[in-house]
Structure formats: C-alpha cells, structure tokens
Length: 140
Image (cartoon, rainbow, N blue to C red; front, side):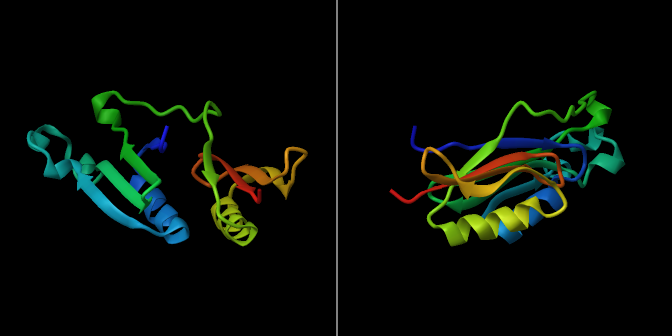
C-alpha cells in the first residue's frame, strides 16, 4: 500500500476540524464542497446547506485527509468510538513533537511521546474532536 486516506465523519463541525488539521499539518484543501453545491440540494434543510459534503486536505504526496458532515436530517448519526487511529509516520523527532503537541491540545493523551521497546519515538492521543491518533518516528 502506497498511502492511507482516512475519511472522518463529524456532526456539523467538519469545517472547524479540517481547518484545525490544516493549521497543524499544513497542505492545501483540494476539495471543499458544501451541501448547497450539489445537485438536489434544494431538498436539504436550510440549516444543513452550509455543512460540508466533502473536504479533502492534501498534506503531501503520501497523506490526504478527507471528511464530511453527517446530517441528522438525512437520518445519519455519529457514534464516537475508539475503533480507529490515524497513524502518522513522521520524518524527525522535532516534527513528531510539534504535531503531537498541537493536535493533542484540548484532547486526551493515551500514551505520551517516548522511545519504545521497538525503537520508535511514539505516542498516542485523541484530539479535541474525538479522533484517535498515533505518531511514530523511526530513526533507523
């Protein structure tokens, strides 16, 4: 596998979450569509028109993060869980620390950054949006 593209679902705060991720990870939004932009959107309630149907944040050639808003008006319901982590493989300890500190702010650290028995500089946390992350730097 050459890359992994995580796809995240939020209940109305996709724009806030994706803007936050861009501020930490960098990159560019290659797609940022609102429900109002799609054919048939006139059937969607007014309060849902500005929500995000699809956002794609391309950080680099190896990492793209995608997301959407679930709509309760379409009987979509989000259940936050711990059934996934997004693992970012970093290029240095400094990059690992910068991303870890920024993304974990307001969240919950599950495992602080440290050198593990398998040799990686590694840490785990959930961010303020309930998304679970792993950061790993392998010096070798």
